[in-house]
Image (cartoon, rainbow, N blue to C red; front, side, top):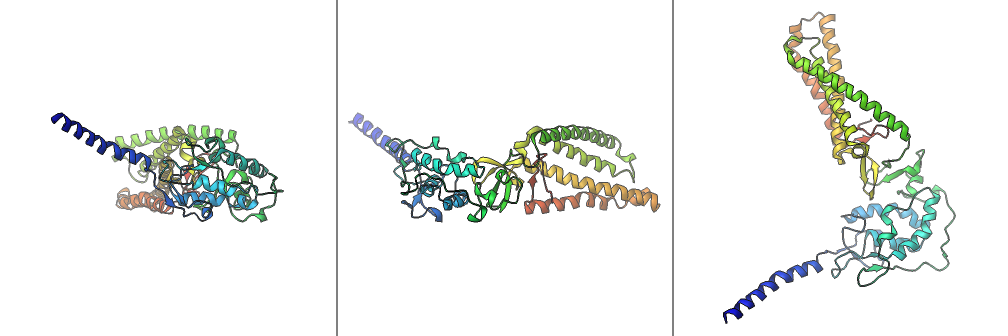
Length: 380
């Protein structure tokens, strides 16, 4: 009897611990109603995030889908609308743990009809829509959607290329001819919905060639190293016996300190590399990188900006203070002690004004990356 009770207790314990795990594995995915207007009434009304390209929110998927609106209006494939929705807003059912996206045949059919159109405008097929990552067929191992067939009479023919007036919304493909048409190489830009601006691709050579960028990197690295070393020697010399440095030459100490941090900022950029500092992921396509427009999203970019902008501005202010103190001593015949009485105002101006200006730039998030140097800075 005791043995039977022990076996019964073990069985109950196993059921209590195993059944919730099994239930969790089969129903771990949460489905939610489709809130993307473009993908309503397409045959299913619930989806699950993250989608097949990594978007965690439907709003992010909606941003990206809007960029394809011109291609849908272009009419290269009757299946394009359903295909895009099945990728960015995949079907969801709590009976299946993974999202149900398009079959490979649907992707290849759309690609065969729409890729020539993209090529005509100088754009590649998006890496996020690589057909090889979709299941070959719908079966019990990998569920997928085959989608509607092509409309009769389409015959896979690509319409004649049309001008910019035929499309009305921007995007990574037609956006070059819409919102980014004013640039000299529009196919190297992507329209970013969140900022409403065009951002160049991270590795694109828009204004400068690879040789120009390599020369600039070597040139800046050499001068940054010399600046750092010479300024560091000046600061150490100042600290050894700071008391003997009086006005008007005393502001040279903070001026040299500013250049130490400037050299450190340039050195950090050289060590971290161009891509790590100047590039951020495209919010519409995480597989692609853009030249940073809001550099605060990139930690390396933000640190380089703070070093260069704050201490660069402070160096300019301290240079003005050097000339001012020299004018007071030599021109107005002020004594060293009299100038020393106003040293607190010097430090307030030398460190406070750059701090206020830097905070204003951070609040406005107006930090961009430079194509030639790869530095993050405020260029306005």
